[in-house]
Length: 336
Image 1 (spheres, helix red, strand yellow):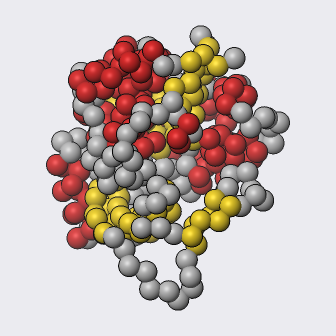
Image 2 (image 1 turned 120 degrees about the vertical axis):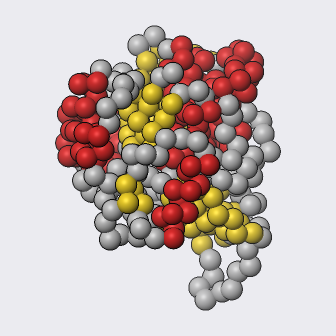
């Protein structure tokens, strides 16, 4: 069985579902097109409040595990009740957590997710940490097993030093790197990180992140999928994947560019859809190195997560993704 290290966040997610919020169109920004707002001082009653485990490392590891890829979570919790809760929930997902750390004075990471039921979207408010206080060098030195891939997500202030260590470790282990840049990295670290782009096998970004990357690097582009894919690939990445919400996902590699729309499912909550797509895509790619199959598994997995509250609740296993593979591949369209 192939093995993947998942470096990123591990959180306690608190979902607060509202029947409807005030949504405002924002024509002044290309990346902040809609704003959620509330009456100042108002008392708002929620439809429900649900607690689930989440975070990029946990979500992707859980999805890979179901895709029959052994995954290891590299994240940090505090020595607190919340930290114990997060670790216990991760244990129930049956992913390897023996490289997790309890260290530092910062509280465990908690996300409050305000969901708009009518518009099927959300705003996430975060506190605490599961990434910055994680001692990556110590964890990598402790890791003596064979590893095939390294997933990197949710990095923050010390990400430059960590990326350098990840690249060196990957080269020594002959492992491939999957990168999902954080908003912090896109805003602050892109120019320095670009030195490592040619070492990265796959980058996953959503459409807004793709726009922000090109804007921050002052690269001219057109706001259309084919151009965004090509311009980001020119930065050095082997394969570029862009997810675009209800419009599906796009992929670009040496053999061309492709698009696949979303599955028609009953959507309840969109949190975790991007991570589910990444774990489904990567599960298939590790299994076969087939881009179209990977795109199909990613769409199948992300569509299933939309039907549940909680970013690990709707994840599909390998058999379930494979059952949708043939029909979805038929729907894949080339992009010119």
